[in-house]
Image (cartoon, rainbow, N blue to C red; front, top):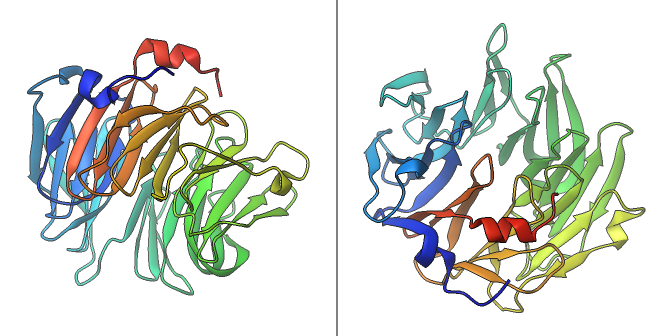
Length: 346
């Protein structure tokens, strides 16, 4: 990857929204991208209208901070706020309150296949989309939620491990860890579930045979995990460089790789491209960089500034990357065809 100005300057559209970013998400059909903000608003843009001066439609979604966001169905979004509401946002601008939990915060919100959605407020989770709504009180406060790609499994992180709900059986299974789980990620085929631990490590479970794969040795907590689309390659934060693991190798715990710029600045977010061997990495100083796995040569998407990067989300077809920072700078960056051609399928 040759030295170029940051891609955001060449093929990006950015907005300064004046409120901290909580989350970002693309609609499943790839036609809209949404940004949830700490002032209770939701900002939505259409990539087809990107370019200088592109419109960003922004409206109040919650009576307090907008804390969580997920794509839902083909074109909609769901948002959750500290007003206790879960709100559905349609392309025509309509908003529908799906649930009200007065006095509680919607800390985490995810959607899966088959029209399912789940959210957490403290120790309680709600699962909707089946024959009946499921409400479950967990043993501790919920720290992360993640649906499998098929939507038939929901992982719930907390103290002492993760609980996995099965749509087939309706039951929860316990996957134990030391301390708290802080983050979760499923492999695309649902065979592996990874959890980032408070104890500066990652734990991976192979669900078919119950094998447990500990991945230790991090200088910090791996708060963001991301799997490749086809193979079982995992990348994480937890240090100043991208940490990668190939779970298809014998004894993957002994095959740790680190790559990216040598720096003292910690990573805050990583995100595998949905089809190519490319990893987007966001840093605490606001920089966003694109890497080929195992390589140190960077392609800068965004220079430093505007606070820590809080979200990196690829469009479903991988044509664009949405990003946002703690200080409320958000952007959509189109990926040049030349960059995508340089990376093999992954």
